[in-house]
Image 1 (cartoon, rainbow, N blue to C red):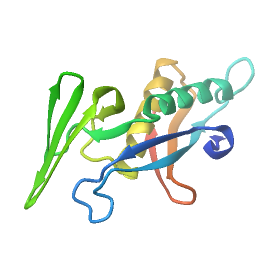
Image 2: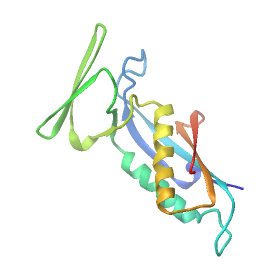
Image 3: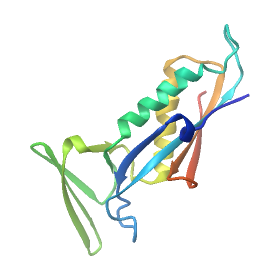
Image 4: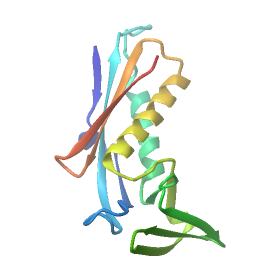
Length: 165
């Protein structure tokens, strides 16, 4: 059986800025309103024969969205970025080939993610992993996999799937 949440209709969204360093058009600070669809596969179980209570899954996804909302998302593990903390600001430099860009952003406006880049593909995998970890904490044994589609605006998205077992 498959359970599904549609982010567009349930408010499972966040707005963030990012930079795809080195990309010809996306290599500047720009933002998106992202929507998240979530699908779980498994077998119903428990007192009510649910795959999972919709409210529980929505709470997990809304928590993920809240953490990412209204931040500049930056890749912690990008090979051409160097970060330093200067008082309450994050100073970072991107340098590759003949291109060098420097930024200084208040720490409270930034979220460093354990990724090599902030693309829809990497964010989809990251978010899927976060939801997977929250489901594992619930010790669910009837859910086999979690799938997330991250929409970078309406009509264009990336889907990733992870098994719980």
